[in-house]
Image (tube, rainbow, N blue to C red; front, side, top):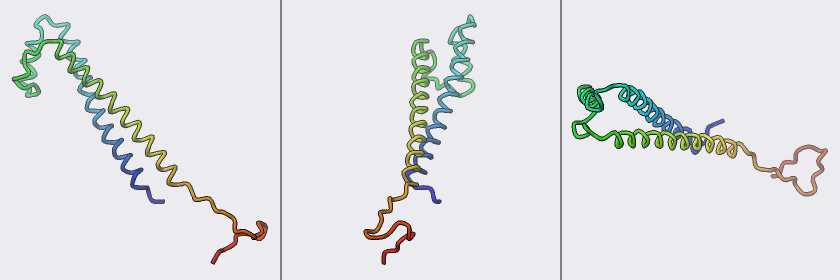
Length: 124
């Protein structure tokens, strides 16, 4: 049985949302590790900024941001991850409903005057 186009679109949308959620989750996990290690170090955020700039993962314009701003960015990533997870779950649930609706067969109405025990009646 062919897959309905709407169902396929919703599955693909769920996959894209899942990839985005995985990216946001990985970034949030990295931030968690960095913040924990940063809290244990005496050097402070300037050492972290220097290391991230050397790796090429932090633009120079973002160096020296206050911790409050960095934490706000980490929270934004967590909210984005939760939103993408909800979008993925919604898209996959809708794809399942769409598939179920596509599989429904139209109700066959009996021909007036036909006897049920005679079997199916063909209308010409």
